[in-house]
Picture 1 (cartoon, one colour):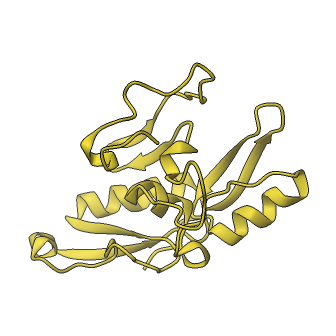
Picture 2 (tube, rainbow, N blue to C red):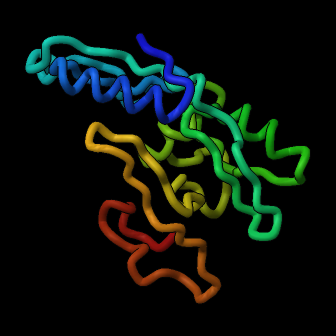
Amino acid sequence: MVFPADETDLAAVLDWCGSADIAVIPYGAGSSVVGGVETGGGWSERFSGVVSLDMSRMGGVLELDRLSRAAHIAGGATGPAIEEQLRPHGLTLRHYPQSFEFSTLGGWIATRSGGHYATGRTHIEDFVESTRMITPRGPMESRRLPGSGAGPSPTAWSPDRRGSWE
C-alpha cells in the first residue's frame, strides 16, 4: 500500500508501477460498495503485482470561490470531511450517498455515485464542474463547465440515466 501526499508522489508511483507492470487500485475510504478495490475476475493475473493506492493523504477542500459557490476538493476527501470544511462558509455539497461516512469524492466520481438521502439532483455528476486526474499517461483535466440557467440540458436524458429527465 502506498500513501501519496501530492500529485508529484502520485505521478512517481504510477510511473514506477507502469515500468514494473504492476496494476494500481485506488483506495479511498474503504466502503467498496461497487467492488472497486477487488482484484478478482482474473484481470490482475495479467500483471506482475498489484499496488493499493491509498488516497487518504490527498483529501480536503483546497479552495473556495464564494461568488460562484464552487469548491476545489481533492479526491481523497470523505463526505464528513467535505461537509465539515464547507460548513463554516455556509456551504454544503449536498451529496449524501448511503456510504457517505466511508467513501470519498474520488470514489463518488469514479462510480457515478447517487445521493440516496437527497432530493432533487442526486448524482455526483450534477455537482462536478471539472476534474483533474493523474493517470499513467500524465495529467488529464477537463474544462470547467459551470451549471447553466438556460433550463434542462437536451443531453441529460439517456438510457444509462434510468430513462428520465433529472
